[in-house]
Image 1 (cartoon, rainbow, N blue to C red):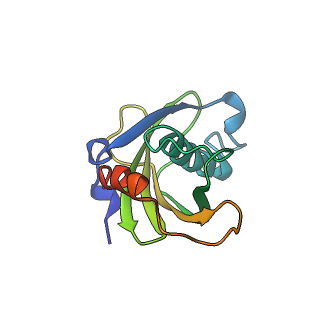
Image 2: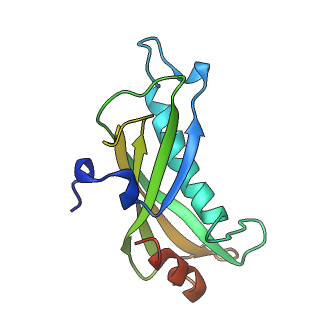
Length: 143
């Protein structure tokens, strides 16, 4: 198991910046917990639509989330721009677990870490299928 607090942004092959908004802060002056989960979802969606070129509307198979996890290590707050990092962790026959970290501005230690599990399914049957070979190859480059 990876100790995420030992990881740095350069350990993640896919990165994206996510600006915070005033309304993301809660009454304690930091990002509400649900915002962290949205950011984790955002980095995964940007990865699947970007490098993996997945089109949920047109593709015969696509990934479906079956599990997500977020661990909180330190607070983030508006007006920070968050850098979200993603890398492929466990890669099975039908599923992939993405390891994710959220970094605040100017901070090399993740403020939040977690994972996101995708299972690939057939569009018509909604049953799990093997990860398509071309997508598997792309995922492997981010391991």
